Amino acid sequence: MKALKRGFSNIWTDILHFKVGLAVLAIYCLVTQLIFGTICPIEILTGFPCPTCGITRATGLLFTLHPAKAFEMHAMVYLWLPFIAFVLIRRWFFEKKKVPIAILLAVIILTVVYYLWRMITLFPSQEPMAFHPKNLISLMIGLLRRIMPQ
Image 1 (tube, rainbow, N blue to C red):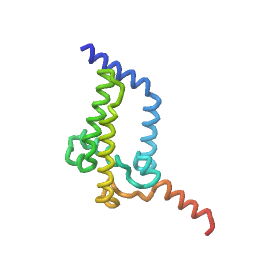
Image 2: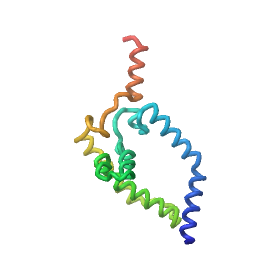
Image 3: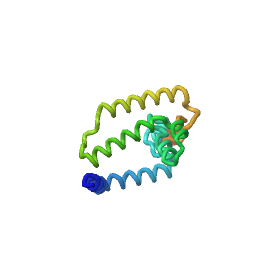
Image 4: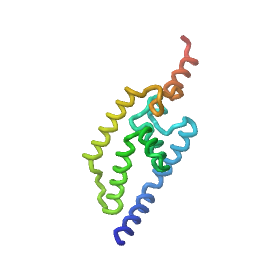
């Protein structure tokens, strides 16, 4: 019972410690979702999907009890969510603040390999691996073409 109480106290401490960062992140997500339809900075800038493209949607699908659709959206959700849960449980309930680097690297490498496979097999026609032409680089190039004579 003491460990559980200490764990929840640690969660609250982290929330208070990171409150400004969490608020900035929430505002960023809201603004970019409203303006660009995505929160991914790589997609916003370039129009290309990033290695974790679709993982937020996959998480939502998983939490709404659609595991097959979650797997289809981004299979690595089944590695990232347990890893994040493992790290947070270690941090909050066992006060082990070091992230297990070997496991993190393995998950990152698998995510990059999965990304390359998806880029080869799904890009650019199937969500979430579709190209989005309304990106900042395309918008800036279009603006420059309008204001600079050829």
